[in-house]
Length: 377
Image (tube, rainbow, N blue to C red; front, side, top):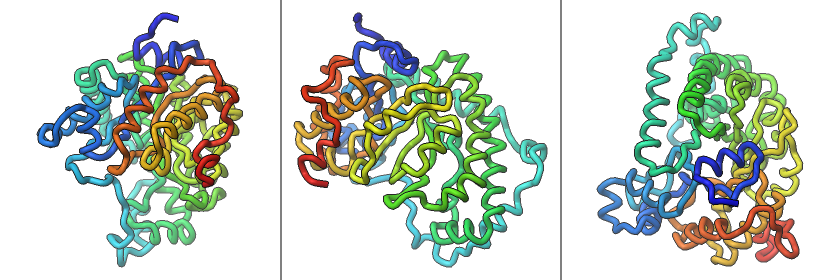
């Protein structure tokens, strides 16, 4: 098969067509020093323009697509978006009740404050900057407002949020609904821009709903108050043929059928150490009967930070074998990599997958996560 362009490779994989090699996605690489080394820069160059350095690192990895990239502003920055419960001391669940009471009860009133022009300008600016600055790397949007508005804990802390779900479920549901009404309008704008820019019809979204023990709140609560609002948001995108890939932190197994029923037709992440079985996920189908797209995340808790180059290659072979040689597979990281990850492991991962011919299984095929087989966890 002739060599495809980055866009062609992503487009054909999304559509279930033959590709010359498994597409790769970047954007979730942390650690300023790690990124500088991958980009071939010294630390001063990185600090002078971190965004340019992040893009240069991904160009060096030769990724096909990139989500909105994590951009560490300092060399020692560990992560972004950390929620620390100690920051919410004294916050009571009644604050969630008060927040709900601030929202109107009708869609008309909620939409009266929606600025469609500003929303379109924001999205358009993102796409224009990506096409101008990324050197041919294709944007794989991950606008989190498209996947629901679950994490109220970022506003009130975990304790107040969980308590409010128990004491004031209707109020929590109203917040989800009110915010989803406006996000549905954003989805309609994105449908227009996907067509205008002829984008690869794929989007990555879906909030963290689980920890290592399973769903943070009752699946019954989610099915009554949360999932219907997510479906409201994504329906315009699903109807337009955009494949939606849901982020899968924690033990998401109890909720996978819900993700699919809502309209998601892909999954990303996977903490294999919790018992997530990629081969089992491969057998799932979307509500339209499609094979799922799998952003087969390289393990950021085991293989990438602590493994050898051989471990990295074996994990990729496992991904390929579980997807029948890479059907519907996109190589990505399971989450944002840490400062402890050796750059060499990332470079090898993206290099090695380019050498594997699609459709070819291992001999014998790997059907169990290699790290567990080798290290017993």
